Image 1 (spheres, rainbow, N blue to C red):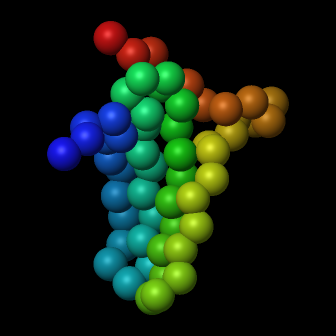
Image 2: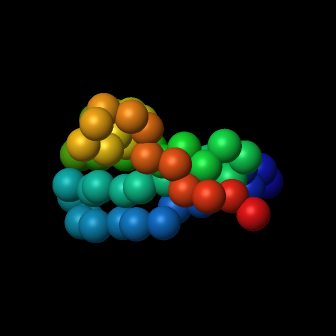
Length: 56
């Protein structure tokens, strides 16, 4: 199992919002799922730049 991505936030059951962090780059991703559909995108800050979590 690859542990590159870590889920750091989750909300909802049928309409799901999750935040995933890439453990290698620190880039945060936003996932939204609803029923059989879903989408993943880079999470951006107010300046339009990717949110980056410091990696250890």
